[in-house]
Amino acid sequence: MALDMLLARLARLGDRVRTDDAALAAASRDESHLSASLPGAVIFPASTAEVALVAREAHELGVGLVPRGGGTGKSGACLARRDQVVVDFSRMNRILELRTADLYAVVEPGVITAELDRAARERGFMYPPDPASWESCTIGGNIATNAGGPRAVKYGVTHAYVWGLEVVLPGGRVIEVGRRSIKGVGGYDLTSLFVGSEGTLGFITRATVHLVPAAFEVQTAWLSFAAPLLASRAAERVFAAGIRPRMLELVDRVSMDLVRPVSSFRLPEAGAALLVETDGDAALPELLRLAEAAQADDSAVAESETDREAMRRARRLVSPRMKEAFPHKLSDDIAVPRSRMADTLAWAAERAAAAGLRFAAYGHLGDGNLHVNLLCSADELERGAAVRAAVLAHTIEEGGMVSGEHGIGLVKRRELAQQLGPEVVALERAVKSVFDPRGVMNPGKVLD
Ligand SMILES: Cc1cc2nc3c(=O)[nH]c(=O)nc-3n(C[C@H](O)[C@H](O)[C@H](O)COP(=O)(O)OP(=O)(O)OC[C@H]3O[C@@H](n4cnc5c(N)ncnc54)[C@H](O)[C@@H]3O)c2cc1C
Image (cartoon, protein in one colour):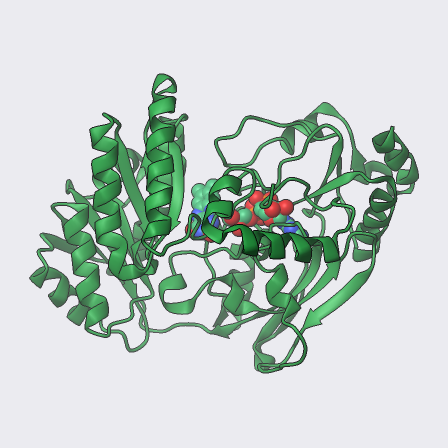
């Protein structure tokens, strides 16, 4: 069998090739709703050369390879089948260079995102992309999904911070793309092509990422509203006034009720809330004034870094708490032009109510990117699937994207095809076949 032959050829990697139950089980899940899927083996390379060896041998034998970072993805993109092998990057986790004068760091893909930010902050700099999972996701996974995060509303998503990459291609060739300078043009932008490619084109084995000076005058507040729609309208006023917060997150009543018992910040009893944060010149008092004029009932302003972190943590806890409470929930990370967010949210909530389903929404309102959740029980799933399909179709009609940040993986391939249309899908398939003619890189993901 091809898989056995591959494992025999990789014998020199010793205990970095694992086929024991514990290793297979640990790699069998991500944070999507999909059931566990056991791979045939898990490999833990320690260097680019080892990744290249795996890529060469697997390509020759036609064995599918699935890159894995922190396994926090929500789309099944890092899951493998029994005849495929997971390549886990947890051993390639070094920060190789922190060149603050040149505004970049060079890192291995398994570096945990928050650790890079912490290391940069020790030097007075920051790495802005901050997915709510940043204590457990990796830079490699963030690049492969083009992850966003609460700070994206001011600082942008991962793509804006990826200057250059070292990539191992299927077949084992190692290439370098991109730059180490602030500027640089020449040829097609292959770096960008790898960003968001969900491990379907090659293995990211090293990344040069942009650092920026740490923000000053950070201020954080939690604003209460009677309903999500009012919070959304208040956000529109803030942006219309030219204020650019560095965080503007919606948390609805259901989300607050779930987090309240475990939050050190005392969450208000409100229909909805905005977690807002400003830095630099963006003025919190002006933002609060606008929000009050737009019917904010109450506002709590953090007075210390401990308070600020308690508010941010309350927001970060929403996703895990909701998953715990509603294991069958159907969840999507839709993105629409910001001015369409309020109406899209109302539309989705009405659809859910009409089908008799509980609904919750939270997330990156300032980016027009919300996590909409149908809180189904096991026997409501069929109804939930119909509402979910309608919400995603409506998102496309609104000029939006079926995924704002989590990616396509296994869970949204049909919807992606609807969004892109047949011509673009054909072009994307052609691009894929240039990099991966034998279809061994993360088979079956993104484009079915
Ligand atoms: C509680 C929670 C909160 C979250 N909040 C956010 C958020 O705010 N914003 C956001 O964008 N996402 C969020 N996510 C989703 C998830 O954390 C992100 O998608 C993250 O970028 C995944 O990183 P990872 O290291 O866990 O990658 P994995 O889940 O392991 O893999 C994700 C994809 O990256 C590929 N990949 C991983 N490493 C490499 C590599 N070295 N080379 C090539 N491909 C690779 C995999 O094959 C897969 O396609 C959240 C998830 C959870 C559970």
